[in-house]
Length: 328
Length: 70
Image (cartoon, rainbow over all chains, first blue to last red; front, side, top):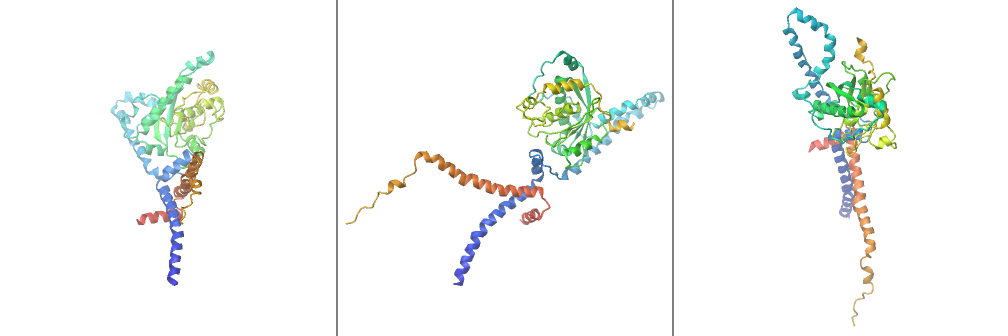
């Protein structure tokens, strides 16, 4: 009697226990996978689902490496003592103002990657629509060459992911410059690339505020290359008499040129064009780079007529005063 | 004496008409593929979400400890 009771109890325990153990094992496997692939999952949640998540600060220790290479800078300074003649030192002293803007250029090769400043010859890897003809008044504007000196701050996450991050930035700036030159006659000149030691996991607003508090080192525009998508990127407000000096560049991870649309969007915003947010407008549907979305690579990059007019009208305006300019 | 077995009911047990086949296939897919996948996938994804977003919670710590034992 007792043995049959024990047997039935064992059967019952097995009947209930095995399915529960399987379900718990499945859930536990999920927890383990989630824990081990935490960065990838959080990145997916942030970039694709638009969730506000805090990425682990695992990349912190890597940041100082490129910064530590700054001692390379003294090398170009060494030639100065080679000229001990007093007559020659005087003209050198008269040009400190010129050497300061050059300093960020020296910042460009802070990493061991030597052939960084080689000219980019790669064609734009995504389709770019040819620029449409303009009315006479705007055609004259298009013909005015405008040069925008750019310094780029790079998110440490991108630095970790891409060993060729400086060349990556250089390619994107060159491609963006080609598009902008054709559309509005603006040429981007890369003057500096540095790691952006911004507080990790902060919101896009905080990143933009952090960007605005940084010196531009003599450049016109400071671009923060973010690992964030277009969701939540705050709009930039420009004064009527000047262009903005700072902009956040969102990413489209699925693209062959992940930061190209974002960079065009950021430069467009800095030059005073409004973000196209209405998904039903022709500009948005046609793939204007002023649309706040990740355009697929299959869709050509265009620029809607309103934004183009606005950019052409404002491209010659001065850029807002920098933090470091204000100190002088 | 012995009568042959009755076969009058046999035709009624034959397979359903061809028109019902797509319905039964959909039913099979729903019952054996889609619903179990959603159920078990949901449990797994729930665990993955928990592990990624609450790395210091007791559930995650317990699971990592158990995984560390092996």
